[in-house]
Image 1 (tube, rainbow, N blue to C red):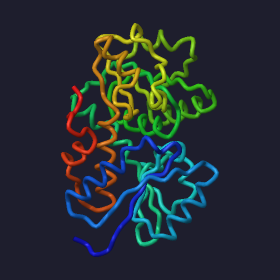
Image 2: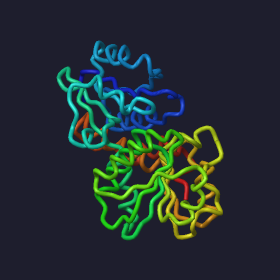
Image 3: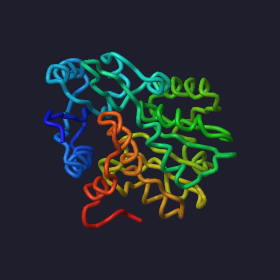
Length: 281
């Protein structure tokens, strides 16, 4: 065990919902590491000052969640290739005083789909949202073959246009859709992905259960609550569900590896996440 104590954290707003402290601290404890992980609420206008403070205390590394995944890049010293491609980061490592940005959302998103051996050939995909998480999702999907089209819905049409341009640069076809079209497009989609925070406070999903095909896959990256209204609607429709906690665990594993150059104990992380009730089925 190292005698040097290392602190890690997550920054975002809101941040109370974050499960990252629980799962990372469980991993540290299981491995006997002299490390801790805490959550900091950082408002948008406090980002620069907060990062200056993290530098001052020589933070070991940190995760970044909404709404800072894009803006954080203005204050780091280095971006890896995935970050440059996505234009957003969710993980920063302190490497000899330099803040180096990474994006583990890309691998975190795609791994649960790979584990299900999904064949994307001919897929029509609906993506809800156009923020940093959506960018990571689309970079991940650009590595898959056979996707027919990606439909993008976001209330801010400027951000939808920006994301659509990114999709096209990645070699995929993209269509911006309106709120009026969303149920119709959803009913034709093979894969529906929610990258927005909608559902964190038990809000109703934009997608009705009657608009989800039985053979569709529904992927909600919201992980708390585990069962969002979108997940409920997908279950009602008989669709396959990919849960947000699956992406959370995969991206956390990748972040842990970047910070400490070792793999975390996944079972300890899962136990911290699900407690005595076990993984949902």
